[in-house]
Length: 325
Image 1: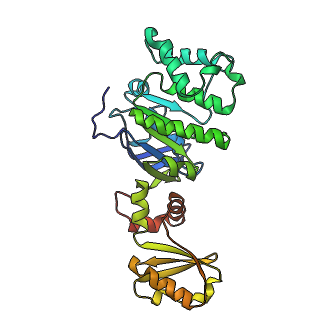
Image 2: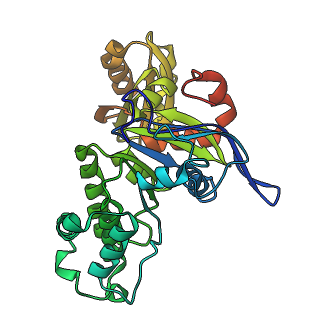
Image 3: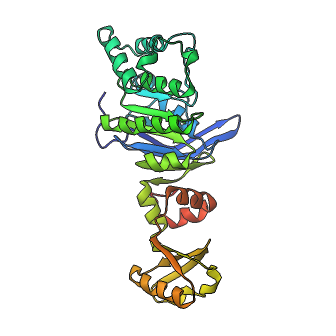
């Protein structure tokens, strides 16, 4: 099945899901554009895994609309799952089988043609760096090798959509970085990826599109750069000094300065007019401080994440509707 280019790979609208009267998803909206990495970012219990299960049709929403590759996964579950590759935090592999046999079994489940099955397995195994371990029982694999095997398995049937639920869970930093690099490379092949994580560093390095979740609902969504610029439209500079910031006085009296926030051994200056930065530095020097560093402050996804969680209600009122819930 080919999706229409302008149709998002995943679209959830007003989705609710409860377990024994306990809400897991509340009015959740998720849009994942084609050919991009969309990261569902939030703490444990935010609803990320439940959202993935609704996307694949493994779980039905209580209400709301779910569309995956233009299909209703509740009605067209078999077709949806044939177009999805899924890797969970603890992939279900057969430890008593070899890596090769695990991949053969997966290929057969997805009806990969026998005439191309072995070649496709070899290509996938080589791509994910497990070709030397295919004859080994999976029970002897490290956690990182099991994740690589799960990634290789997820693309055997050439799915349009890849869904990764905490794929680096339990991995050491080196293995995690290797897995993230492989995931980034997969978008070059035209794959659309939806990935769940609670690791800010992972989201910062991967996300083309980010959706922050908490308590089963989306707080903000959009491209990371657009979100930070919307939340912090003013320019700001971080000025490091060799003295206590308390000696600086009120820098906001300088024309073009909106406010100044003391930091450890320095100050963050919010500017209405970036051209007044030299005036700010001069005022700091005049106050008797020695300036050691002046750098523009670029808000990160981490800054946004904590700001959103700290004051989600105010953020919802101040941000455009397409970026806030």
